[in-house]
Length: 119
Ligand code: FES
Image (tube, helix red, strand yellow):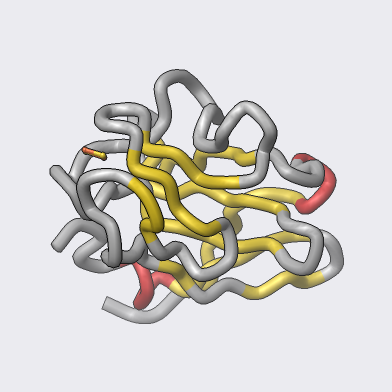
């Protein structure tokens, strides 16, 4: 299969300290974007504890204060930039970050990075 650039979202859809779920199949959000003070980060929506989706409802991936990524299944807390779990049942493990490109306010990911999203 050839490598393709896939449109993910417009940066204008994001706001500081918020998250946006990204669906590749139109059903579940396999990825999510987080805009931090310094960058936009694209994560695989797969908690390293029990390999479940993190959010408790659409786009709710962050703590109430927006400072951390939270898996609402068992309250694992992750650093928004490194993806490392610093509190909870998977402490020391990391979320998987996906490389992306921002071109003229649009976010793209190469399809080669979207294989084996859960491992
Ligand atoms: S599945 Fe995420 S903390 Fe348990």
